[in-house]
Image (cartoon, rainbow, N blue to C red; front, side, top):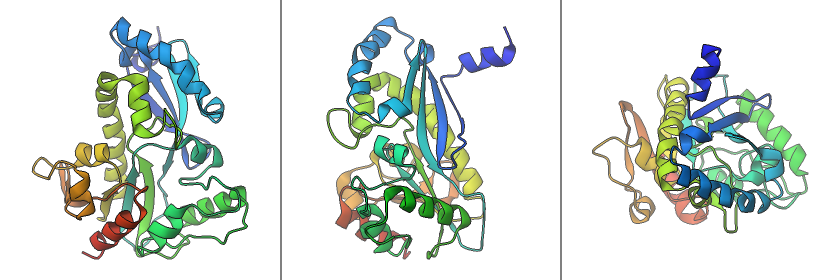
Length: 277
């Protein structure tokens, strides 16, 4: 066997940049993710229900024997300028947004997602809001072009990524990170997390080499990246603006934890509070 092929099969999680600049192509080796037969059997018994629960999964997921292929979101501009970098880390991507081609795409064509309008813009983080009436595909094209070119009003140079790469629907039985945990199980999530954290740390080291800060919007992302003496996540601490520390192993990089994006008001308020420090 080709040693490179063997190395790939011995790796639980691999990924590469997609042809589309806001996407990554991912593969999970199910033999590594589920070393016990009973775990694989549980996954197999649930996968069809998960896959059929959302029509967008047809374009995002592909199960081929012992390999699970899928597309995820990641938008880290290569271009730089004098502004400090700010990396925003979310829980896991929405299948709807992946298919649309941009983080937090609106569910209704011609409308703007509240994250861009009511969180980032009003918190003074990023003004990249377009008027209602613009088709989603046109909105996505403009937003992608401007983010890659750094052509936007912000005191920061913005990067976007997710802590958990596996996508899920925004609502229903299989929604969010909880839906992925339900699909693959707690133990498999723990095995996968080491690889996901390594992916994120590579982004942090590359994107924030000249300073800046990291903001997490989800419990696992905060707990997985915080330094040892930083507080464990709680929604009460997040709402109170008390989740502040440094990235594990990188004490020069500030780490902030804010409430989840679904809590628009608290999320905006705490984000604005942190970025004024």
